[in-house]
Length: 144
Image (cartoon, rainbow, N blue to C red):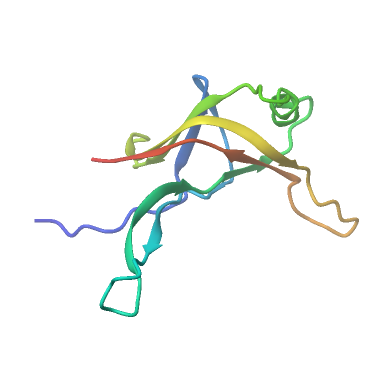
């Protein structure tokens, strides 16, 4: 049986609304169950018990190089109005050598909460990077 190695993080794709976009970085693929602490006054122990509470999903941040005439991040952010926003589902895939998904994160009902332009520096020698922070209502993981 050949040796198995962990998957590298540098080969991935992001799709939203059926469109595949290139990004340099994706962070925030985190979910947790918050603990509820409870204690009844008649408990013989002088401590509380813990039980599972609400699930919590961190915001996802996507970063990419700035492209001329591409204002998609700002256009999406401008759809946010009081109690109304354009929501999208995202599919983030970690790919193998054949460019096939081996691990997939499905982000449900996402909407933008922050768009950040590049850090401009007169002595800099790097690509201009913009980022978008996205809130969402669910993160489903597929690892086949």
